Length: 465
Image 1: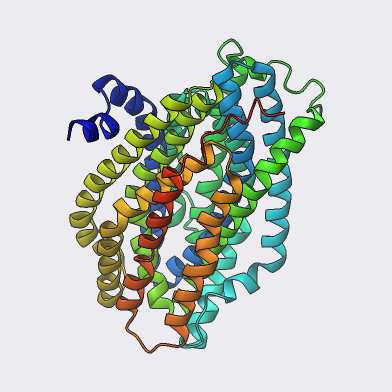
Image 2: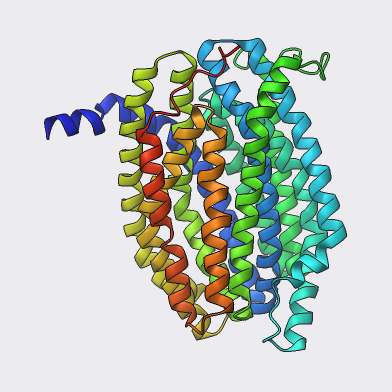
């Protein structure tokens, strides 16, 4: 027992250090998800079809957001280790790379959504529903898409800055930016969706406008702080002088690491959208129920999601400094801590999940299905946390090929075919389908355990020739 305690339980000082990093990050993510939740509830007050149309479009926005995260991730691995090595010039190169990638992903995302918007939304509309329902949902979705698409610009540029701020341990700035954005978003949601305080009643269009403005404010706060505090952010000095100058050798190394990550994040997010599409063949009611459930579970999942980011930052900095034994020790303690915290979060989610669907103006059957799915998600949350912690541990050492197979490989080889088979070829109640598909996370945990235990991730990539 003593050996287990020494291996998996850290000192009080260590947990204070970890909490000092994770609380601002979780708070920022909670604020973001809380805004999305309020936005979702307000649209839900308008009706089931507007809520479903917005939910479908947000699947595509989610794919874009995660792709941006993937585009930043490769450079962030190097940036974190450069920070641990105290190499400011190296960090500066990674910031330039992130900004260039942000612009490229913005252009690709806007082109795809503008060109194929109706067709993409149509993939989530079941022929089991009436033509009237299908037409209305498509119209609401397109109305929302044509505005929300502009939020891609501030989100991507903001992430390029936020990612480097976080890897330097300055989590509070991003949190303050999100707090400022939430006030604006909540006010605009209420006034523009329902037509209050002299504003016109705009419904789903109002929700989209509020989101675009809020994301712009959030990005501007972070960007302006970085440029106004060069002493705290020395990597930003001269960032636009010879902006396209990044050593070819570093570009090659970042691309080798980041392209699989970019592809992984894109395929994983697209895979999640494909799973949702599988569920959608069961009808718009299932789309609406999952939308309600995912809205609240995303809020609670912020804890383990951001815990994964903290694990990547802490372990990555130690690997970059060449402290391999300390990195191994931190990994053991952080993974256990992540599971413990997510278990407490899951316990808190259950009672909230029972009452939360009552906030929506929709049918009782939809609310009941949403409650069931929330409880299933709560049960699997500690498992999701373990898999997420394993993923970030592997990624911190630059083992991109392994993480690609662990994440996207699992999604496309196991999860999607399983969900497709159950929804298309098996006459099974949707409750059982949701339960069986969700519990596939057990397999991912099993694989993740042995990958982390193998120490294959213990590498210093910034000193590699």
